[in-house]
Image (cartoon, rainbow, N blue to C red; front, top):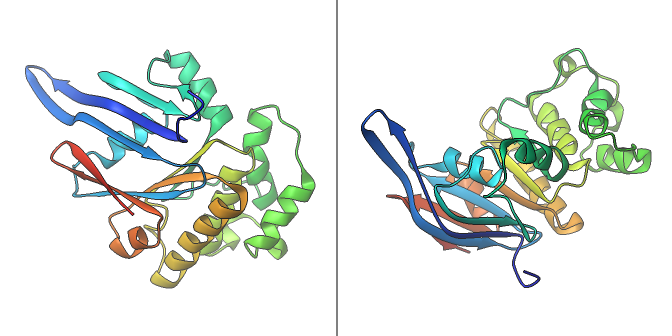
Length: 226
């Protein structure tokens, strides 16, 4: 497995059942994403973008096929294994930021480290706060921040435990156009600097064009563009 890329999706199928009705979401899809790339998942509403994100994030399992993240197969994990894997190896960024309102910026950033019983590297925290222009906001509550600032805090929180993969679900959906470009360019720069691999779901073609790779979902299949 040493020659595998960061994300390796191999012949994956996924369907959902509602009584006697079966809805096929993916039909034998395969694709790769390399280490340090920023990839966009695009497609029409209902095409399966969220389903694919759930599969990559070990929130769900495929019906068939295999998914490897950093040479580790996640598609055959049991529920408890997936929970531990997510905590240790995946960073999530959400459209609604999901910051804890009663915790300040620093405490929100610390949360993944505390949950994973990992020591804090204050130098790294301060570096990222400075890099994302949040140093002066370190002890502010989320209610004291703009939308763009809250999303930048969420980015640091996703990065702080050095995950193998960062998954961003419509991370700029609540931001204006100026902050949208800032956040995506920051993600791209951090991918290059720290060799983080990031996959984001978006319906915004402007955002997708800023990424290294596009994974386009249509009619249960995927194609890749660079």
